[in-house]
Image (cartoon, rainbow, N blue to C red):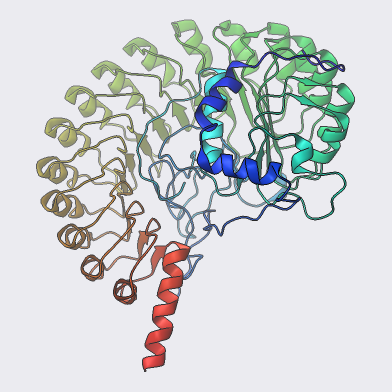
Length: 610
């Protein structure tokens, strides 16, 4: 309950979980001691970071040019020059995370915003994607996560993503006044995302201090008490674009809801609302942002749905566990004012659906439907569901898929199908799924939950034919030579297998014989000369090896034979002089700033010798 007078709050489950996960982090502890001691002042220095935003690749004479396309294609972050989804920056190659993104209003930019708020960057000769992927760095540890199913999950995954971002400032144990000393002068905290884990109460003075923060995302996951005048002050926060995450409230009074409904940021995520009544809907229907997440709303009233159907935003996420079909029809009839942009409905707490509810879902007027809580999908229900005329369908909660249901999904006319919850796939189901063909130019299939791939299943998946296809198999941990040879017969465009941490030379050679455009192997930690030489034979235009942290001159010499357009080595942190000079022979590599500096120094030494 939000109260004007402070009281002793009960520590929320979310807060306890976050402390257990992050409280022992040495980096965060050092940061906390540094700032708490007053040594930090008001300005927090930030380590040099790589540009990871979507940009169009431009020809450069210098192979070390920093803006050679930007994005990290790790499983969970796609190459930004592909006509496919990109993910928010995070270290884990996971999917569907709620985390901060660089968000712009659709009416303020010519770029297309995604369901996570990012803009799509693409090559000038390719169409763009409507979807953004929770997109990261060169870390290759693979962990497949599902869509958030509880408020605790939601906060945990957000914090996990922020912890790995160099532009996110996590401050456990600090009061807001420690971050923004009133009496000191200077620039605000230099970070895109500010996370105040321990702030349970917010005074008017502290709310005014937070208005100085110029970043894009403000997380207050433990905030349980705030006076209305302080909330009103907080909502005047000047960052642009703005995403506000208030995850600690148990309940919200109507006055607070009214204030939140008038906020003008791009994304609002707030807990404490349990029913979506006509009164609540009336306050939020005028919300000018385009992403509204109410994870505690478990009940939607029909009159509330009717009022909210006049909303003109882009994305609605609710925590409903059950909903009447007629109410769902009304709720899903809203029309976004951002014509041509994705219109997203997320009902990820729904565990089961019946024929009436699926029929109502098939009438949703948007183009992005998230049903990641659904555990089973019978063939009859799948047949009804694929009648929905949308582009992106998330079914990451499915752990099994029958051949009948797979066959029904293969008849869907959409573009992006996520089945990341599948831990195994029957060969018969793979054969039916590989029949997915329609008029969409860039179809994407996610099977990141598969931890192993047998020869028969791989052979069936390879029968999926369309030279513009993208397939993600980032959960596969091992790949033998025969399975690699089977996958090499696939007629697709992008293949990502970043769960592989080791690859034998024969398997690498067979996989590299695949005639696609982009091969993403960001899980490989090391690269010897034989494996490097095998991968260098890949005939495609882009090869991503961002998990490799160190290279020797022999491996670099082998990679120098690669004739594609881009070789990405973003994970390399150090090279000796001999390796740096050898890397100068590589064609336009993408590397970290450390390696870029080493290459520039090596180049200068070579010029001096000449």
